[in-house]
Image 1: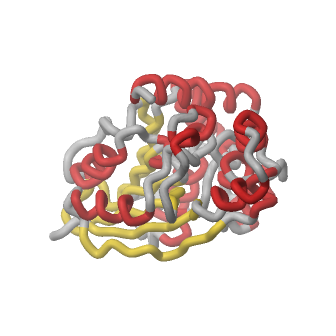
Image 2: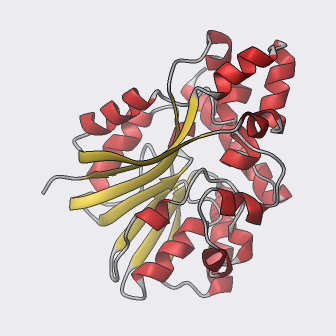
Image 3: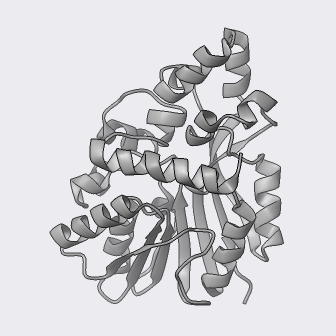
Length: 276
């Protein structure tokens, strides 16, 4: 698959999500999920009732695979960058933690998402949050300018993850940190899935192995790399998802093959720091 083709298809899919208020790459709803409500999806992947009530309702599209803000240990006055910020859900949670003296920057490559996020920021009166149109492989953010970079099930969709990790290193202040929730693999997928654009959008074929993911973060120059949490996906979450079920039908996958593929995917939370 060509990188620009992947970006084009992903951008189009997420533009439709904004218009339809439906999920795409949420772990529960799309790549590994069922048709639960957005609120239920968010609770299943780690968001509390209090957090869900604390931000504009329309900012939560049920697109994540974890709660990076919960483990980020954000402090008053810090600058936070969210890669693939969508409608602003994690940005608004982060903004509540860093306070008026802090700042949150959300970057997303889908114009419709950025427009929606800005609208939510206006409705919620979030003066310390800014949304920028851009790609996470080429961040519109200054060098050494942010304390922490967060991301929620977005890097898996990038066709150039090495560049994302390199850009993360560039924008972090010395001593800054990252907290990513993402999808990785325990083993390589069959070739027919690797080359499937449907599987890519479903957050499956775009995933690196866990070992490769950690190695590339280290290669970017980051230190103290840790997996803080990892979760496998129940098989019923896989088979009840529309995107994945269409792939199963397309390739006529037997149940044992579906189980094998499902057992290959993990949701992880990764922490790392930029050296002083």
